[in-house]
Length: 189
Image 1: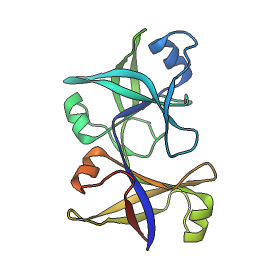
Image 2: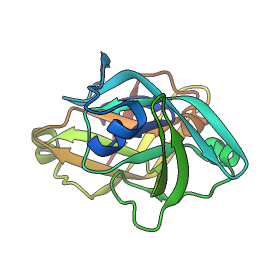
Image 3: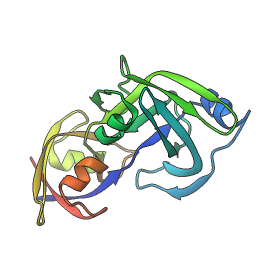
């Protein structure tokens, strides 16, 4: 079995430069407070409020750096709070996804599409993928050991030279399996 560290991902937002300007002020630079495992990605001190038809969530962390598109990743529980039904998709697949109002300290935007439940996935360096005979887009199973042992199916591979080995699930999935961040799980080929 090939071991993979796993981490739970809470609700967060990726922003394009023009939306950063609206939400935080013209030419605002995001503030890195914590580097994430995936090289070049970081949690920011900046947060926003997201509002849907039936509720809102404050303190949604911005993940930097700026991207070519704005995207909010939520769990099913978050979606119920907000009153939306976002599709389960990989990051960046935003066509016909849900909408939300995003509020920052300097302004607000209506995100017309860009809200998804992130599909469970494994980031993997190209070298690891090659060793395992995998490529981006392949789908595998992953077994989580422990008292709430569970096997996740439909786990997408995201391979590249700019990736580091880590599986991501949302908080709902993490709680269901009793996951502790960065514990190792078994990749089933």
